[in-house]
Image (cartoon, rainbow, N blue to C red; front, side, top):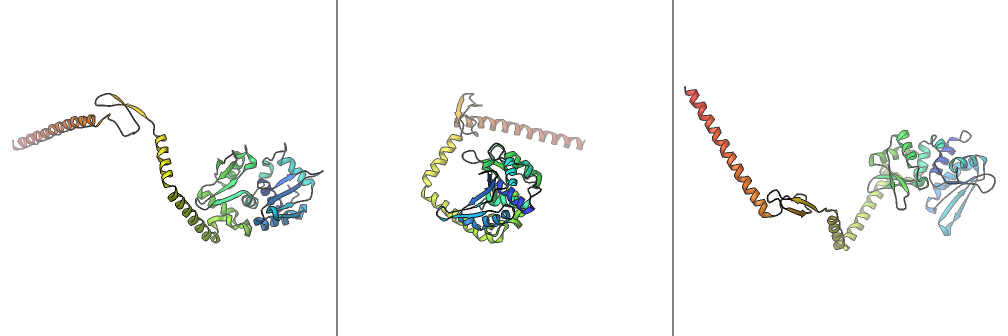
Length: 295
């Protein structure tokens, strides 16, 4: 992308990793991206940057709660389309991925990232890149020394989840490039979000407590059932009577209390006998030492 200005290039790469798409309506390709109306300021900011090179218009659909930016057609976008859609399906262009830096990463995170206020960690959805999770994971490892975990949502769609420390590092890398309307995605890194995070935690905890109180018996029964299923029945041999018995308690050794008491009695007798023998030997040695000293 040597012909493209720096900020246009980063916004374009970040958008293609996120919610943006490039399609060919006629001879050349054009860029398109849509958001809900709550994120209109963010999309307008992206549109101003991309319009400097590609032009385009913004369309609002209030009835659908949707705002969309569509660029003009361009030969440059046609070349990008060939790299990102080689077989008609969106894939990661490793050639363009090499140029991604903090600005492009910030755009990608604002498109498809989210912050979990309870776990204090970040998640980036990569639904369009199923099968290429390792490429994006390697990007974070090599470029920013981050090690996200690849998870799969319902339907088998992948996402990258960052640890608490990794999320903190990620947010500090991109914090200077976050649009003001998307500050809420910075989580604990932005002081503006701390009251909101605390309010969300309290609200969710109250909902959980209310749900537990309402469904307490069902929840406890479900937990007991899970514990029963987790327990494995084992067949063991009693060391006292040598009979085999079934148990789900890994601490149980004897088949009955009778065998346990018999063993304890025998063990106690052996212990007491050994103790008396050791005591007598001690006194014998002591008396022998006294006799030698007198002589």
